[in-house]
Length: 204
Image (cartoon, helix red, strand yellow):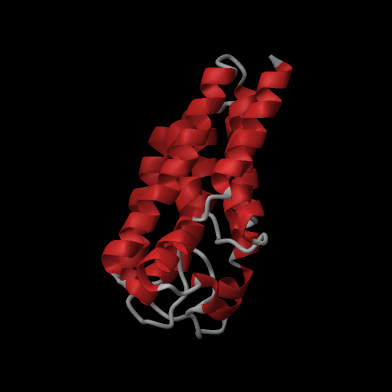
C-alpha cells in the first residue's frame, strides 16, 4: 500500500506537469505563453493571449488534471487518505513547476479547484460561489482565487474535518498565496489589473 501511494504521488506530479496552456497556445498561435502577457502558463493569460474560448478550455483541462490525478491515486491506494492528500499537492506542484517545460508553469488555481472538488466537494462549491461573487464585484480574478483557497480549509474544519484533507487544503492555500505574491503586492498598492483587461493577472 505504501509503495502504491508513493507511486500515485509521482504520477500526479507528471500529470500536473502537462502544461495545458503552453501546449494550447503553442498549437493555436505558435507562441510561447510564458513570453506573452503576464508570462504565466494558465487560463487567464491564455484568454488574454488567444481568446476567451481557449482560456475556458485551459481552465477545464487544468481542473481535470487534478481530478484525474486523484482518481488514479484512489484506484491505486483506495483506503489511503494520505495518498490522496499528497497526490493533490503533487499535481498542483507539477502544474506550478512542470518538469516537461523547464519548471516554468502557472499558479495552480484551476488544478487546485479540481483536487478540492474531489477531496471536499461541499466546501469547494461554497468557496467557489464566494470566489465568483468576489470576482463579479471587484473584477480581480487573483483576489477571488485567493479567497477561494483560503476559505476552503476553514469550511473543511467547519463542515467535516478530516486531517489529511484539511492538511492538503492548507498546503494548497499556502502554495497559491506564494505563487500570487506579486498579485498580492499589486492588490495592496491598487495596481492590480482587472479581468478582461488584456494586461491583467489572474488564474494561472
